[in-house]
Length: 327
Image 1 (cartoon, helix red, strand yellow):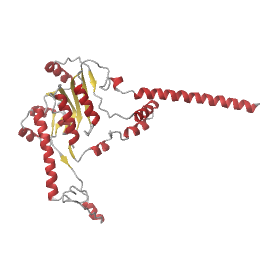
Image 2 (image 1 turned 180 degrees about the vertical axis):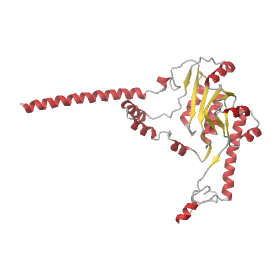
Image 3 (image 1 turned 135 degrees about the horizontal axis):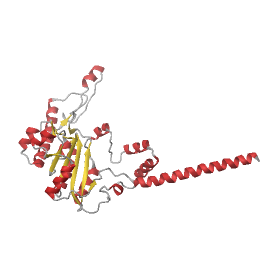
Image 4 (image 1 turned 90 degrees about the horizontal axis):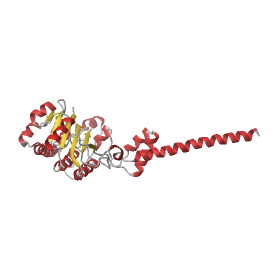
């Protein structure tokens, strides 16, 4: 009889545990469903946001600039949206890849061809970070902003000396004398150096042309300023690289005065995050709902249009020639 009683008690205990786990599973599922609702539908971003009437959009560009298809698509979507009346571009970036900066510059220029763009610079808006600012109708910076650094750099390590010391040799079979230039296992040849210098010079000329066109400056004047050095916001104002010292408050005041866009006009955050598939989103939402931070971090690191927020991984995303201020 005692044995049967113990079995009944154990069974009831197991049932209670099962009920608890079922409740936790249901709660986790509900939290996952809530977490997988696009952020824009809950926070007012452009992807299905809450602002239906006339409004501005704000795009923040920080960190190293690389290819970001989702960002370009978001800008183009805002360009074609009749409810969007202007763009506030907030930049805090040391620059990045030449190709990534060019693509973002062109998308912003397409927007600026139809609607006003104002730029607010944070601590850094240098190299490609400055490149993306020049299509704007008005550029605002703080006195301490570091900007400019107009130029292109191409680096290639050479470990041939180290290999010689350890007795390692590398044979290269190439289709032409310049195919193997640059190489990490042998120094640049004079011809290879001249070839790569030509590539850098051509990219530099393109950068200068962007600044001259966007800032309505003589190319010779831009070239005189574009020796790679950074300028403070105070210096850049005197040189004509920025228009005014100030931040978003001053930018909104300028939009109201110069473009008739009321300062009370609402602002939506432009959603430029890569879109994941439903499976990734659902699992990531479940991880957030259950508080599994490690799982969420691992999921975000998976390639889904590969975007990593780790600086080292960002470096891998850059192409060979970069417009990047390196203090």
